[in-house]
Image (cartoon, rainbow, N blue to C red; front, side, top):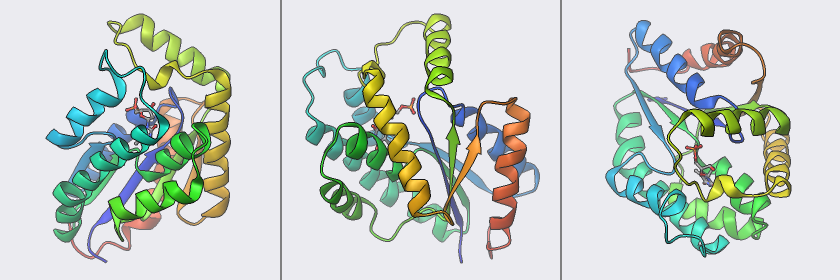
Length: 218
Ligand code: TMP
């Protein structure tokens, strides 16, 4: 196998972005070439789409279907512009969210047809699939508390998706649980409620096992 593709998933405030950074630093210290990206976004086109999806002041009326297609437009670009070339070079690529987010948020959260969502994802990614997905779990209470404190410390930026109600986020969490149950070998759950260092060690135990699969990239 050339390259290693790791994705992080979870609800708002689960701490996955901190974990992405910590993992990338540890891998780089070991001499690996690591590329970090995020979804939606990660390319110039994807970052424009991210703005439309999350922060644009004119996006309030966006339908679930438009949201699904924009997420996957960003993804189709990211896969071809960044992920496939990096994997072909034997690098490690870590993405803060990937298609499990679409299943959880647009499929389960927005309640679009799961079969239709899967077809759109297939078109966007083809056979570019994560080798390992870390699902960072927190309770809805922890998620809501962290979100509130983030919004209190950062300059306020409106985020359309974060404006979803409690029932929406409950469906998203439940969706993630179903995804983890369906693919237990790829999707590894890590409890995100503890200290960041402890969460990182739990993440590392899963990543370490995957490193032996890398043939190039050191
Ligand atoms: P984040 O970068 O803070 O995680 O924000 C990304 C937001 O976009 C988050 O609310 C989850 C949402 N999202 C989807 O709804 N579907 C997707 O496919 C992806 C990648 C993200």
